[in-house]
Length: 276
Image (cartoon, helix red, strand yellow):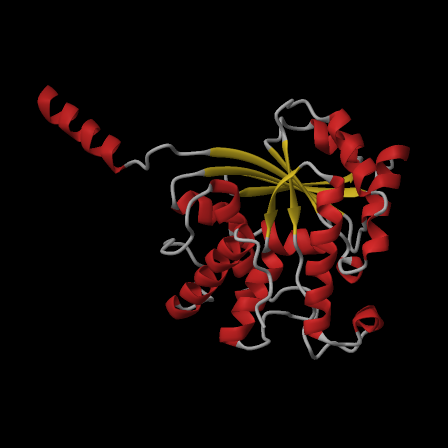
C-alpha cells in the first residue's frame, strides 16, 4: 500500500510543469490595459503551470500626464482591479500610491493613452512618472515594461483618429516611431509587450475584426490575442500550443491568435516592427 502511494505521488510530481513561475504584474493604464490583462491572461498562464497576480490601475482614457498628476497629488481617482487565483476583485476610489504599495510587484507596466500613443510630445512626463512610481515600490528589483498599444480599426471615424488622418497604417507607424525614439531616452524599460504588433499581425490573417468599437479590442479575438502576447512576455514561455482558449473562439482562431502573439514577441526582440 505504501509503495502504491509513493508511486502515485511520484507520478503526480512528474506531471507537474518544471520551474512553475509566480509573477506579480501591475499595469498602470486605462481601458487598453483592461482589454489586455483582465481576462484570459490568468487562464493562459495557469494552463502552462504558472501563476499570475494581476493588478490594473484603471482610469478610462488615462494618459501619462494624468497618471503623473494623480500620483503627485495623491488623487483617489482609480478603479483598482486585481486578479488573484483567477478571481477578480474591484476597489473604487483608490490612489495610485496605495495600488503600487499593495503588492511587491515584480513587473510594472506603463502605456500612453491610445490617441496619444504616436505623438512624441505627449511623453514629456514619462521619465518623471517612472521615477516617482519607483519611489513607492517595495520591491527593489521591480522591472518596468512598456505596453505597446494598437492602431485603430480602419472603420473608425471619431475625432481621436484625426491626428493619423484616419489611416491605420499611419497610426501604427507613428506608434512604432514614437516608441523607438522616446523609450531609449527615458531608459529603464527591460521589455516591450508588443500587443500592437500582435493585433496588426492577427488582422492580416483574420481581417480588421479585432475591435468592438474601432479602438477597444473585441471581447473574443482581440482580447485573447493581447492576452497571449502578455503571457509570453511575462512568463518567458512560447505561447504557441497553449491549451487554453475561451469557448467563444474556435481552435483555428486560437492558433492564429497564439501565432500572431508569438511572432510579435519575436519581431520586437529582433528589432523588427513593420508588418505591412
